[in-house]
Length: 237
Image: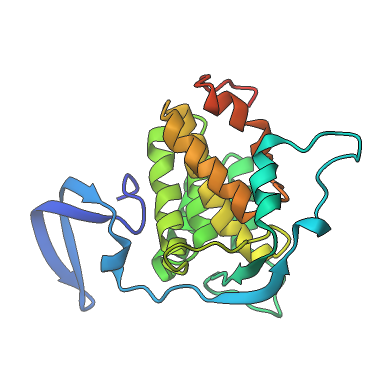
């Protein structure tokens, strides 16, 4: 089942079904998978108002430097409401400083990829709304398997979007740290689209990111010209 992104809905051709300790089990072949977060019955993550985002309080470069084109419509739009998205981290204990996401990254960096993925999968199994687990599952395979990584990023992205009303025009600033898992999912999704040469789709994702987080802590402004020109991904990116 590790070939399935947690949150996807799969169709299985069963070979064997059984019960053990009152738990049902099924073995078989996965015929297809699809993503439909509305069918998962999830409670949307909460959005907490954090005041107004004001372009006059942002740094747009030195006074003698021209404003970059991507920033002009964002500045012209003026103040917008800002929010922080609830972050879910199953098993988190305020009295315990350990972080299972960091633990998974440490395992991966130590060469224990299997245990790192297992830990993230367990977080998603506990609560599909653990967006940072989805993001890091994507991160772990982005370099080698962008066509698989994009599925992890998209699950996290679509689950996060359940919290955003239609036509959402607010900001999700990176400085409010609970926004970061959603922004990581969005970033990874855009990078995968770029690597898969879906330039128009990637450009829309990156434009959206700049509107959500105009401070651009993820460096999107350095990518948009290449994506807009249809230049392929380069390893140094």
